[in-house]
Image 1: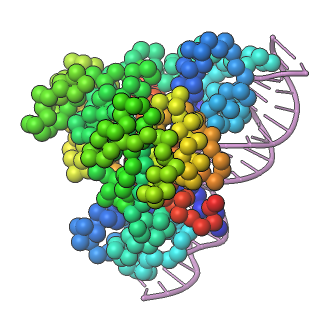
Image 2: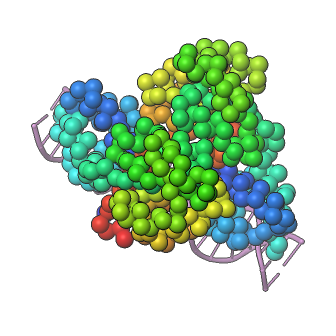
Length: 208
Length: 208
DNA sequence: TTTTGTGAACCTATTCACAGCG
DNA sequence: CGCTGTGAATAGGTTCACAAAA
């Protein structure tokens, strides 16, 4: 069965919500109540889950803890994953200390840059290293994914380095299209473009 | 005619690319060459543009400068838009100094927080103010959009404040569903979820 | 009765394929 | 000719509606 990509990003959202419910001590929840929390339709939630199995109890709903673990398994989050950041500008430095990652099963283990001004410097207690040592360090520290916060003109080169080192998941913040082999998955976060599309909606005459 | 939301986000990407081409001095470009740069299909590019008019010349392609201006008009970017950031944590502070915004027609004019430790402090040369003064300041400074980088538990309240102040475009970084009136547009950037969906792909056994 | 799981129907978006213009 | 613009065909994703389970 082919699983829609959108299902995967919704599961990622469900996971965060289940973690929260679990911390609250909620034992079980129906697809209807859950859907209101995450902002989708109940059928959508059920269909998304149905790609992977039957996790609910008819007439009852889903066990919060159980479902959380199932989704962790689906997303490969049973154990924490190590992540490297390449590019220690404003954004890279902020992400190095972003609390939201740890709680969701990610560990920012390694920071890289190519500038002598930044190599050796500490960010949030972690030392920034030379990106030319990426392959060796990534192997040693079992890095599985990379966050690229380099300038546009450095992007393709940085990507080459991480792909050559065997990384198969890249989160790209440069507002430029990244060409990678098809066994590598890239997620793009284009912050200025998010604002541009908001601009369309706030500027529109018919949209109020 | 109804315009797909995805078309709007692609136009936002096209805009960045056209700006780059324009800086390079490229005079004109075909949908085919352009599509390779942005990573979509040529028909997609043409269809997206066709919702708004006929901007190309048959047998020739598109005038770079002209198309850039047309898209600026569509997205409401003819003049720079003022943006506020609420929540001066790691991420908010980084975005306050993010260079990528200015070049694309956005000005971060106003910074807010609710913590006495942060109010009055300067971030990238801009002073952080009390979020309870949001409505007044946003009006004075003609803020049209807001970036929310507040903790999850403060999100809904922050949103209420900006919506009450007449803001109709919100970029939300908290990994929580935000309820707003339907005349307000929210774009969500959920960084941990981006990593989770990458995790699915790097963990998968069949996906290499 | 309540709520899941899921084929079928529907709706939205992408790609095809070609007419028509310069 | 080369390349755009666009209806028609296809693919992809969402919602409906209901049978089955507890």
